Image (cartoon, rainbow, N blue to C red; front, side):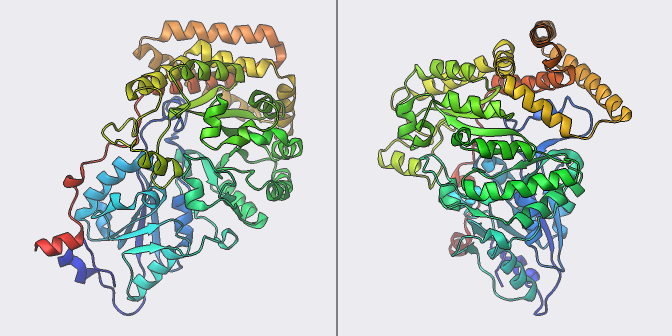
Length: 557
């Protein structure tokens, strides 16, 4: 049995009897700081009690892996506070998290030092920077944990010896995974549910940790698993579902095999779920795949574009963005198929100089992508980028907003240039200029969206009244928050002018009032984040402030 390395005196109390006993398990996801991805400021404007964009998929997935006979609870700090006193009743507390949650993970783990439970940590961040968690937990899970997590629980419950560190020798066989426990999710507080079809990506982007953690060969669930998860998500009360694959079309052949099954399920169930996902830009080269996705009720796709500069794309090994015709042409075909595009961009590559910010702005405005998310290049531990910058002596952690030394500009120039760029993009005239241009210039997009709407069940009178009330509530809340920030007159005039302009231009095909109000709420969120611009990679406590690892404590004693 593993000792409680944080509480040697309590270790004996945690040793279970030889017979198998039921365990009480709590799985915690730390809160995120507000970000472009989180939509926190927009969610607050809508009716209802939505508190978070999407639950982290790790929580229901890990809960689904818990062997029968044990009690498990999910605690997502993004929708409810952590009652640390109440955590004393659990035998095992698991904490997961990504690099953007590192500071909050550390704060939580420090608070858990006084809790007598076994503290386990797993997830993306510990998998790329394991030493950060020295002295903060009893058990760590590095990489995938579909076999190690349930084995640990079985051994702990049976009183068998357990380890302080687990790492799977083989990558997870996705076809063997059980159904995630969506029944444990407080679905009323989330906008959408996650679903994972595959792990891994065939490309070699230098900055990406996905291929480090999950590999380059996509591993997939079966169509039967996906359909079962869609059913569970529908049963939990969700209306929106994000397919969280880092590249849904990493294996195009298998994606094309899956989609007809999803299409049939949607038809059989009167299209209960609106889907979105992430994909590489070569989606624009496959008309068949685009058509299947639209028929399956996919509405949005996030595409990693990164940079308009060919040399920067070559540098980061994202040469698939350069194959064939231009990126703008590929994006146009994706939009023409009926998909709303969200784009990811980066600045700070070695081939980026101070002119890159204007180039990015001009490209994004031309692209018609409303939600353009621009981040600074970040060297994530374990990635090829991290290794290269380390070898070149260019890693520097003295500035938590920029962890490396750029090549053709100073760190201050990179930070200020990125900050000014996202603020320019978030100006209402620029944001809606992109959205309306992308919408109005593509008659194919409008036609396909009309066809999507037509296949959905007709709204009842009660539903239409509820939607109308919802629009009024959002408008009222938006007006109040704009007034509080002394922006009501300016933004209201801009919003109204843009709405009327596109109505005059497009007539009956224009964006409706409800949709436009939703865009206004979304714009306000991105405007707020841009003007509160802080990178939340997490300013962690200095190493000397952390508790000593168990071995050091024993030696000191």
